[in-house]
Structures are given as C-alpha cells and as structure tokens.
Image 1 (cartoon, helix red, strand yellow):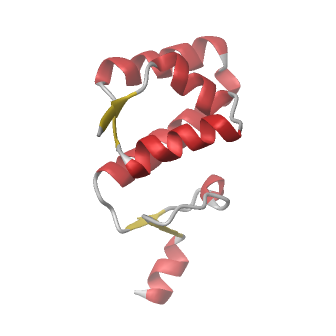
Image 2 (cartoon, rainbow, N blue to C red):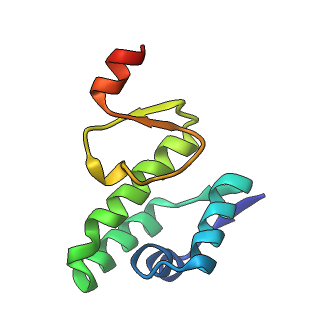
Length: 103
C-alpha cells in the first residue's frame, strides 16, 4: 500500500520519537511504500528550520535514509557518524574504509 504522511506526523516522528511513532515510520517505509511529495518535504524542512533549528540534522538523516530505501540502494557509504546507531536491514550502512576493505 502507498502511504503518505503529513508534515505534522513526520515532525512528531522525527523530532519527538517514541516507540509508537518509530513503529509507524518503520511500517510505512518497510512494510508499505512511503510517498513524500516535494511539498511535504519542503514544508518539513521549513517547519523544522523555523521551530526546531537544532534538529534539522535529524530531518536530513531521515530524508537520506528514506531516499536510499525508496531507490533500493544495497549499500550506503557515509563518513557521517550520525548513522552509526541506525539499525536497518537494507541498505547496509558502511564507512568509506569499511567499503574499501570489504569490496
């Protein structure tokens, strides 16, 4: 099923995470197909910059992972340690050194 989440739901899930919202995002992204329009992405970024400027990096991380999942990426190579604690099955997250060592 294709699922679209409104900006207020995304803000709640990203800025104020809890088990229920984590489960909602997990299901929407992995069990279904999350659809984000350019309008919702722009609004999400604008509201976060205005109301929660110190949390914009969390939104960026979410959007990067969302893009990787939607595009069916097998491996995401990053030097950003903010991804160290992300536990998802796919894509695999690797540092440049780990990538060069393994592949």
